[in-house]
Image (cartoon, rainbow, N blue to C red; front, side, top):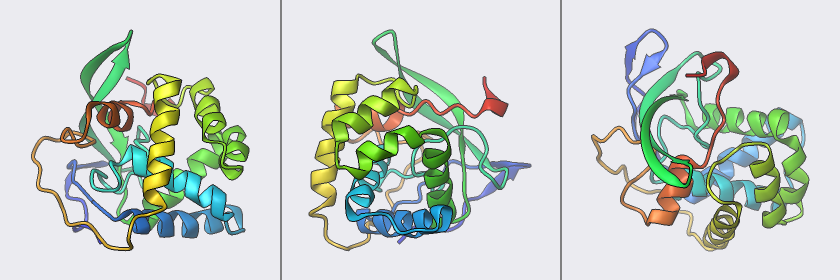
Length: 209
């Protein structure tokens, strides 16, 4: 289901490492995490919407790094972070920068932090997700500064990811070798790459650069 544990390179720092999983595994982990964080199981529609977003942000699971479901910046609850190259949209231009992203020791740890961040910091976007309104979900996230890509492109990509997630077989993907250190794959299409690699702008308040 995934590659081995992340490799430490210093206090609080780990190497950027692919931890690829299947979309089915993304869905299952998010479902478990939502139950733990909120005390209730997510509806099927909400779970589909969150799986679509996590799928979008991780290249359908194949470009997940350090079990980070959503490109969340800073250090994870365990204090770990990975210094990765990533693409950002600045003044309409794609730029490449190196930034710290939260790193986790397991799939479930990453899923739980992803859900907790959404619930605590972007809770106003969840009603749209629960209703299957991906345009509204994308709009609410954009208004809160969650991503820098265009709202229309992000919403369209969410819908595509949702459709794909609904038809993906429950099979695991194999690790994809890489030494690039990019937080997301550069082998996917330009749109998918721009959205999944640069969309999220969740800067940890304690680690702004």
